[in-house]
Every structure is written in structure tokens, then in C-alpha cells.
Image (cartoon, rainbow, N blue to C red; front, side, top):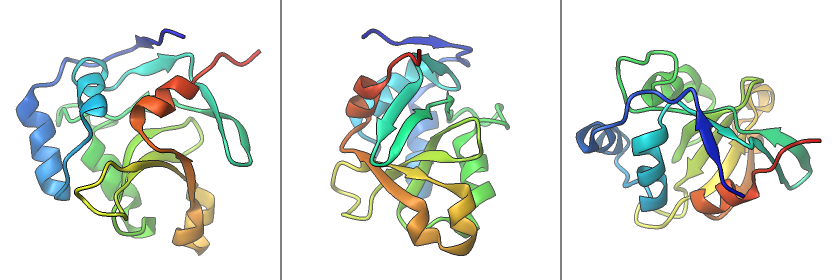
Length: 149
């Protein structure tokens, strides 16, 4: 199914993405970077996906590397939840309920990161249990999106 991105921010320059990568000390996967360059700050349609024991999870908005977009700037969102995140987990998108879709680099910064769901409510009591596996890549996440009936 083709994804239409709505409410997209300004196209990103490569240097903006590199600045965030350098801050985190990671390299983003190419599929994510290519999508991010043109869809930063946008909402995918369809936006619903399933994983593990979660049905109808929602991909709300892709964070941006544009510092001028304070609400969806990836580093602002990282700092907002950093105290409840475990190491090597980096938010890249949110859902409408305060949770995040994240890259999981726990297998190493030189490996393609897994995609995980971070549950903000669980994170207050147990940050490690707040992480749930979604899939193996950003492209796979996008392929899981569907319209809810």
C-alpha cells in the first residue's frame, strides 16, 4: 500500500540529519534517512500497525531534524523522555498517546537498528519493560501500516 504523508515540514538538508546522528553517536539507516529528508514532521496515511500484543497502534508523526520545529524536533523529544529511556534507544516518531516509536541500537551502533515501541506509562516504573519489539527495519514498519476500519 502506498503511504501518503500529510502535514510535512520543510525538506531536510543532509547536514541537519548528520548533526543529530553525531549527537547520538549513531548512523541512521538509509531507508529512514531517505524518508526523513522529504517527510520530516509528517503523518503517514495509513497510520495503524500491529505488533506483539498490540493491535491498532498508531504512527502519529515522524520527528524532524529541523531545530526550528520545537514540537517535533527529535532532540527535544529525546530530552523530554531521556530520564525514562534505556541506553541506545532513540525516539523517531510518536503516537497520539505520549508513546514513541524508536530505533533500538542495543545490538551495536554498527548494526541496523530494530524498531521498538516505548510505552511512557510503563517507563515510569520500569524503563526496560517499557520497550516492545515491533520489527527489524524502518521499511518493514512502513509496510505494516494499514487503515483501521
